[in-house]
Length: 143
Image 1 (cartoon, one colour):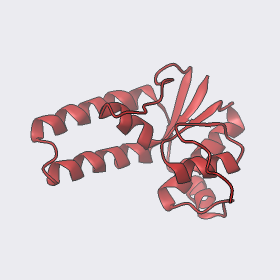
Image 2: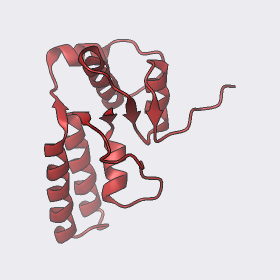
Image 3: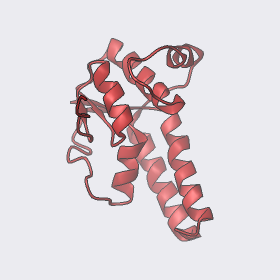
């Protein structure tokens, strides 16, 4: 199974939060965009500055993040990818989510992506709108 992994999935695993993806690590290939590492490191730094974690926790979490990063197939931030992320999407999404979706779409053109993993509801909806199977969020009810 090939998956695209959003940052929210990794963070939920690292912080041992409820609702983690049961398929964690049970994939053949896991793809991410390089931006995930920046997102994850910013969360750790924010938690340190807020006093929610101490320096030892920060160092441990950053080490875990780097180990996980090394296990992923990383899609680089390129001019072409950013241009695709600047374009139109079927649903409303922010900048980082557009980068993740453009990355998954780029990978999908070369290799099969079986599942898009995210805990972000808006990103899950956007991924579904592009035809990805999504795990980690429930589809939003139609109104």
